[in-house]
Image 1 (cartoon, rainbow, N blue to C red):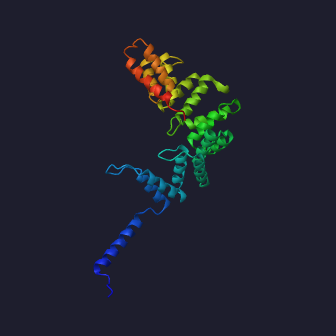
Image 2: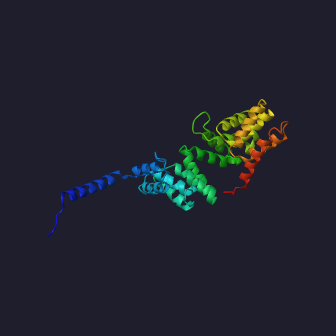
Image 3: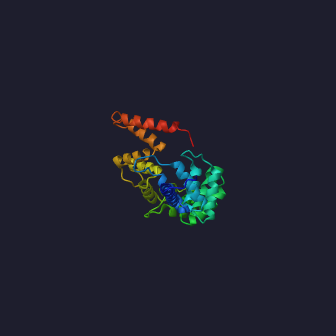
Length: 289
C-alpha cells in the first residue's frame, strides 16, 4: 500500500523551499551588490569574529568579472602589491588595470605607468600613461610626471608646472612630495630652475605640514641652524626632526641620534638615543624590497 505525504511533510517541504528562496534572494545578484558584500566581509562582525578575506576576494573577483570598475581596480591593486595570502603578480595586475582602462578609468593609467616604470623600467611607456592620468587630474600621476620631466633642462618648465598642479597648495588632495620637489629646485637652482630661497622655505614648510619626511628633515635643519631667513628655533627644530624620524626615515633618525649624543645634555638623552639607534638598526636589517 502506498503511503501519501502527510500534512506535516508538505509543510516541511514548503518551509525548506521558502528558506532556499530567501537564501537566493539574500545572495548578491548584481556586480555592485557583490562588491558591497565583499566589503562587508572584510569588516569584523559585532561578535568580534575576524574578517573573511578569502570570501571577500571571491566576491570581489566576481564583481570585477561582472565589470564593476571599483572591483576591477581592487583586483589590480591586490596583484600589484600582493599580501593577505595573495602572491604579487605584475602581469595579473596589468591585466586588470588594462581592463579598467578599457572601461574608461584614467586613474588606471597611473597604476599602469607605475608598473612600467618600477617593474619593467619602460620610462617612455610610463610617461605616456602618467600623462593621460595627469591630464585627467590624478595628482600622483602629475607628481611622478613632473619629477621625471624636471630632471632635464629642456623639459624643466613643463615638469615644474606639473609639480605645482600636484602640490595643490592651499587645496585638498595635494601630494606633499611635489612641494618638496619644487622646493629642492628653487633651493638649488638645479637644471636651470630659478633660484628662490624664500619660496623654497615656504614650500618645505607646507610639505612638512603635509607629512613628507624629507621636507620635515630639511625644515628641521633650517630651524636648528636659523638659516636662509628662518629664525632659529631649536625646540621646534627638534620636534620637526622627531616627526621625520617617527616615519622611519633613516636619514632623520641618524641625524637625531647624532644630535642627542653630541649635544650638551648627551647623558640626559642617552636612553632616547639608544632607542632610536635600535630602531635604525632594525630598519637597516630589513630586506630591501
